[in-house]
Image (cartoon, rainbow, N blue to C red; front, top):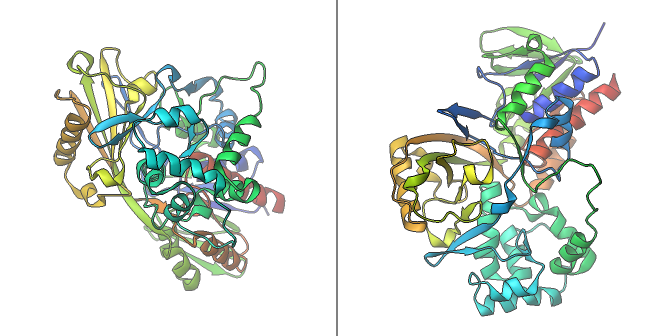
Length: 462
């Protein structure tokens, strides 16, 4: 008799698992409580605007996302960012300053652009340069990203570069964010080269040359019709007969080697393998009946809430120069938005030519309480901030607000130890697998990898 697999949730991790299981000819079913698949990947098409509610891109460097895109036949739909406009600006002391050229994720790799930068004070620049002479940390204990950056590059680098860049990616606070869990590469560089600057320069030298005839890639990539194109292609590849929407799994119990799933309408079925692609707090709720200790461990992972607010303007109404791909705002500036992307400048196919689409971010690392404000209030807040920071006074022709309550896990100090503990507990329940952004990486690429890894294990077992 063939073995049965249940996948709970339909975020990109779950879809990646399902695509791989389908390729291997293994029987599975996806349970999704919403009417739509895709979790946080959601794109809306309104009046010729392509508006992203969640992530607007993936990093091809994390090649698993590209593998998934190819598997479901979307290679020709991959979209490069418009790098002729490339650049990040940082708001500091009432002005937008370009992030100095050669700063890679907060680590400076070129001297002149840093020296000429108006963003960092002279003492701050000298302190960043001294990173080359600071000895590596002696022990292996975890520390917060704030401690790590301050120790190596100084306080000003933390406040003006690291914090806003990281808040944009992780929507959490560097003061309690685990550097081991979020930036393990930095730990390796410190150990191997004794300096992040030396390590980053070496990494750039060692970067493989682009292969001839290889598809052109930019640092960030998207899809022509938005990220939901990936969800739709996965759905088509998997087959709708394997997907049950509007059905919430409320509990899992165990009967010998079988897992019994119960849904909100009292439907029950048993499975040999369970892949839980739900957030850690949802998974904790579902499994607490048969392993309260594991549920308690999962509940210790903290989460943050954020909102994205997209505004569309007539191009003629914007009489200021929108430079780069957008800007980020350090927490110390005490503004009410964290970041802003000029979506239709960064990406083609996002708005009609005579309009501009802008997306702002609220909540996450700071002012999380704003996520609870009504749509109108959030739009007003963003408009006020855009007026003060960039000088945009125009009336938008369209606005769209999306809230993500408990949408992003915080990898706080000690996260890897917690994950190790969870992995040890899971050994007691062969056949139960946990995937997704709660555990080992929050980006689309990491999530896809977690889905692929678990599908491979099941395929090998069978």
